[in-house]
Length: 456
Image 1 (cartoon, rainbow, N blue to C red):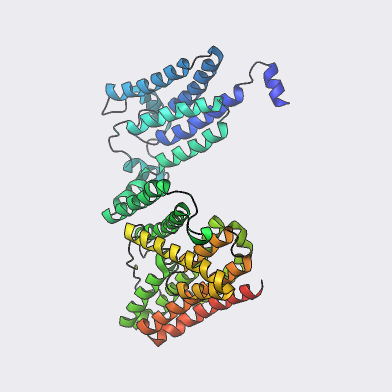
Image 2 (cartoon, rainbow, N blue to C red; image 1 turned 135 degrees about the vertical axis):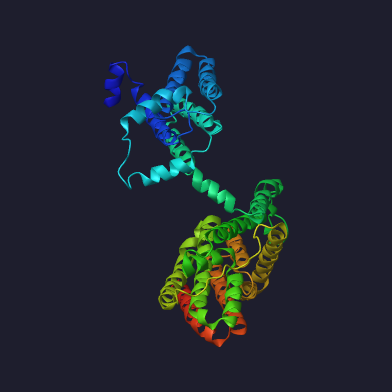
C-alpha cells in the first residue's frame, strides 16, 4: 500500500534515496571524527545520494556513461581537495569543520568523550588522502547499488567499511604484532588454499574409489585453517587472558603439543600443577569441539549421531575444567606452547599423506574384516592424530561405505585412544602428581564420550 502511495505521488524512488542517505551518513560519521580527512558527514551523505541519482539518470537515459561520469567527478573532486591543501583541513571540509567547531564547547567536561579524543589523537597523523578517496568512491558505488535493487548488500558493505575505517588503530596494532613467522604462515596457508587446491583433480581414484586428490587436499586446508587460526590467536593473545583461553587456543593448534609442553614445565615447577592440569584438560576438550565443527562441515548427515558423543565429552570435561580452574593459583606462571606453524608445506603434506593412508587402510580393513578391522585402524591412528581417522571415516560415510553407527564408533574410539596416549605422556613427562589431576578431567571426558556412544 505504501508503494502505491509513493507511485501515485511520483516519488517511488524516495526509499532508495533515503537508504543512500543513511549509508552516506554512516560512513561519513566515522570520517568526521578523523581530523585529517577532508570529507566528512555531509560530503559522504551527498556522494551516496549522488550515486543513486547518477544510477537513476543512467537507467532513464539508457546510457552507462552518466554513471561513469559521476564516478569520475566524485574521485576528481576529493583528489583536487587534497592537492589544493595537502597539509591542512581545507578544501571540501573547511566549511563543515568550521561549523562543527563553532557548535562544540571550547572545553568539554572532564572525562567526557575520552574515547573520541583518544582515537582522534591516534588518527591525527597527516592523512595522504588515499583512504578517504577510496571511501568516497565506494560510497558512490554503494549509492548506485541501492538503485539497482542491491540495498541489503549495500547496507551490509557500508557497515563493514565503517568498521574497517573506525578500527584503524587496532588494525595497525595487530599488523605490528605480526612477526615474519606469522606472515609466512599466512602466505603458506594461501598457497595451500588458492594455488595447490584448485589445480588438483576432483576425481575418485584407487581401491574403493576412496582417494580423491581434491577432497584430500581440501581436508588438509580445513585442518590447517582451524589450526592456523588458533596458532595466530595464541601468539597474539599471549598469556593475558589466563589458562582457559590458553588451553582453548593450544587445543586448536595441537592438544598433543600443549600437553607435552605443560607436562615438561610441571616437572620443573610443581607449584603450577593445578594450572597445567587445567590447560591440558581444556586442550583435550577442544579436540571434541574441533571434531564437531569438522563433522558439520564435511558430513552433516553424520552429525545427529556424533552430537551426543562429542557433546557428552565436552560437558563432562567442562565441569572438571571449571573445578580445576577455581583451585588454580592465579599467580602461577603461564607458558605459551611453542608449536610449529600448522600451514607449513611439509606439515600439510605430512597430514595429507597420513589422511590418505588412514582412509585407504580404513576402507580396506572395513572390507576384509568388517567393523572390527575399522575399529582397529581407529584405535591405532587415534593414538597420534584423531583428525585423520575422523576425516577418513566421514569420507567413507559420504561414499556410503560406512553407516552412521560405524562412523560414530570409529571416531569415538579414536578420541579415547588419543586421550589415553596424552595421559601416558603426562605420566612419563609430568609425573604422577600431575597425572592424578589430569586423570579426573580425562576420565570425565572419556565417560561422557562412552555414555553418548552407548545412548545411540
